[in-house]
Length: 563
Image (spheres, rainbow, N blue to C red):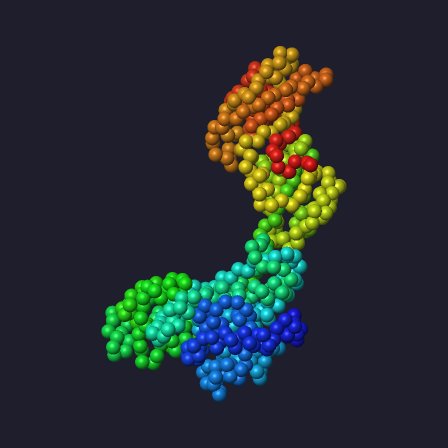
């Protein structure tokens, strides 16, 4: 967005005048004017002053007034230079932003408390200095980036992350105000309502983002995240020592972090701050600087360097994962369930994961996908019948496909020339779909059809003996073929029923239909795996048995059944 067009958009949403002017004026005049002037003089921005006094609402969205307007509100004929000093920062300024015009708007120093966060001053991802000066200007930039990436959203939630030093700064400014103003009537009531920098920024941004994005904010799968990081982590350790003639206290050492607070927080006479356990409670959060708040036990001398570096801002828009589920069928004996690479060589001609996920991801404009299935079959095993339940998890989908689009995806997969894989009942599912797919996974039953060879001719009594076995309990050790990747365990499994289907003109080949407990190794149940599965078809029939082909014909689960 060009500076000119952004300025036009800013003007179309708000200008410092009318209701905003009145709101800002009333907010400032509701505060003790001498305290406002004092805090401005030590480098605290106006929005931080508002939140220190517990103000809520739209006032944080107002643009900063000109120096003349601010002087008029404060009832001063002219503004002292230190109140409205021009920042020495150099960088990429939004010169056309109406809230920072050369002749009318105040360019405050970087706030010694919020480090420019509530002034909408920050370094961007490229390290360029950006001075938005107003909430609407930042909101428009965020909106432009979201729309530029083609994101679709019907609501959003705003997340804010700030560096720990901000909390330290809040604690220290409260100590300063406590020492100086605790005897005044307003102190206890007003400062006990202090709100955090995060809350204030959300007050400033949430409603404006609703306007520019034309959606509501609240709990949502779409997240707008603003992450602020300190440009130069503190390396200075403040002096906690005797300060001033009347302050005789032991020397202590505190954690670094106070260098971000303006040195004017402490008088030149090295007066001491009073610490008490009520200070943090009044602020609403405990201090993170490691100092113990004991009344009249310590004093603090802040570094002399003024704050001149704002935070780095990283903006991120993302959507929590969406899920598309269904059932898949695999018709090939040379397709793995997931992509299978050994020593840089692909195993099989394709994978179920790539065929299905590769067609869903582009439709959702997501970053990536994960494929989840209720169990798996070997590469040489077909998945037939009702199909196997699966979920495709799309990371950061920029578009949520409609029901009609999901059906188009299903048709596209089923019409692929390769005819390797098909899907059934493809649809968008909520997070509960994940639970539904996995809650009964260990309890599910699976049906198979195996082509079996035995070392002797099949007899009629074999058919009867096999069919008579119901809920047969077997013991399986981890198969030799998977010992390299599975723990050596013994597993008890149940064969619920079996049935032999003879093959015409073949006495040693037959089809074995069976229903088993989930997790049963069918190949090993047929040939016995050198005695590691007992009993087996071979041991039951008293001969050698080998499995030649295997198909999964049903996965008995309630989820994603064809309607």
